[in-house]
Length: 392
Ligand SMILES: *Cc1c(COP(=O)(O)O)cnc(C)c1O
Image: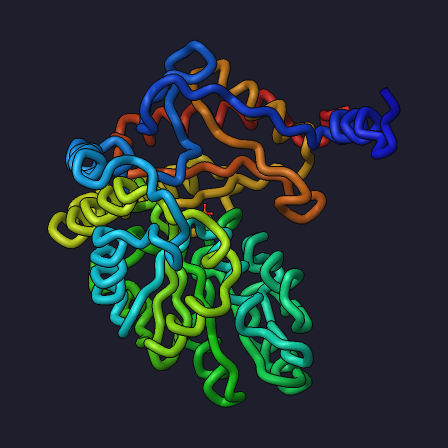
């Protein structure tokens, strides 16, 4: 068979550059200790920050909804797939975020692509943080507008771009950066947007359910829905479910229903998935201990890492990257950690900039203090076993 796309060569290149991706086989529920590739390991790479993915109430809610509504949604939302449980979830999410309305999307990727490609017309501009999630950047590529990136978490750089931007302007940023764990200076960014009559879109995939005290989502950042006209949250991370939503004004939501292609041209998520998300929202609202426990574990980890002088990147969130630099070394360390029974992902380019490969450690409320201490010890030994500059 001919290979006009030269796949074999391109795969080989990825191997040589230590950029080849391989999937591990998960053979248990998503939780702190998982069965992975046939062995029991401690899991420090999941986004299930509150340990809800395997919560009995979440599972039971999805089972009850499946009994009542069946499994498949059968159609897109605009045809006949928009069930009462989807609708109830949208209303609940809008209330929770503190916005007039919310709209469910099947995934966060689709929500980001949908919003940006629907809003921007030819001549408009979207300004994005350099380290934004791929789905925000892809949304810009699929839109008719112009994409400009500003320096990471740098309001001065944003201001410069705002002064030069043409057409209507949308500014989009992650709240918590997915590969770094740091938090955007949202109040400063929001002020700049107001001054320049630009709209701000915040992707809160890694902040929702993790940051703050359960005030409602925008309030955790000291913001309201006038400062952040477009809020995007995901349901597959701290909520332990699947899907995503956009919250904002009634006009925004009605416009997205008319114009967001990843909303219109896809099957609605199964009603049982929406029901699971509803159960998770209830758990988040009624039981703040998971968030508090997670914050305690994050402090324990960052303090312990400082004592051991581990090269952690500055983060107060559940994402705690350990900077390694070289892709080969990151992979070797991740393999070595797995042999010690600790699962941590090696994140390499193009997901992160060249030369900044890292171990992306994520903590969850399902971990124990003992497991955090064990992780610290094994990370210290991993660094000793893999000194920098010894790779090739
Ligand atoms: C995970 C993630 C998304 C995509 O959400 P999915 O529901 O997984 O498609 C979007 N933005 C950010 C910052 C994310 O981390």
